[in-house]
Length: 210
Image 1: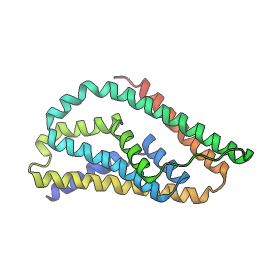
Image 2 (image 1 turned 60 degrees about the vertical axis):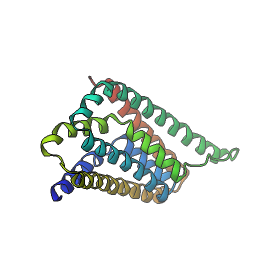
Image 3 (image 1 turned 120 degrees about the horizontal axis):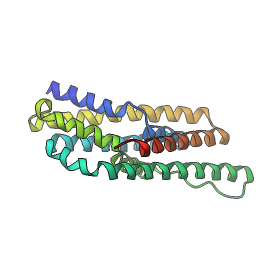
Image 4 (image 1 turned 180 degrees about the vertical axis):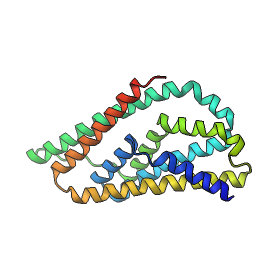
């Protein structure tokens, strides 16, 4: 059981710690909304990681064979999602900034906790990095992965907790950033930087071989 716990923690932190487009969006979202919304979004990411960990433990090597043919289409879906998010974030930020300066329109309501959870859950489920990571985990799970149902449950729970703890930490940093950047120019800059990073990662993903 200890081995399964450690393996799950390592798997969860292994996929969560590298801060990519999803992590950047999480920090930006929390900075522009609230810690509660950010934590819900963080749990959406962790839920997706936990679901992939569960699929890895239950599917065995057959899952890897099923996923291989769709890795290419999933990558392009993720590229499209990232680009849409980048454009949407930039346009929304500019509209909010102009609306504040001209005082002619009300800023659109930020996403609530429930919508943030579902949005980040869906984005993470479409993230090819997560798919590839757990597909690779599947390939080695037959020899070293958790064998029994109890060990499998411990592994999945540990992976979820590890991912959730890191994502909540990112959300907390976003909340602190939001307190520091209280002005509208700061919010605009944060959103534009996040959109730029997501665009760059989407282009890099689109140009990657394979």
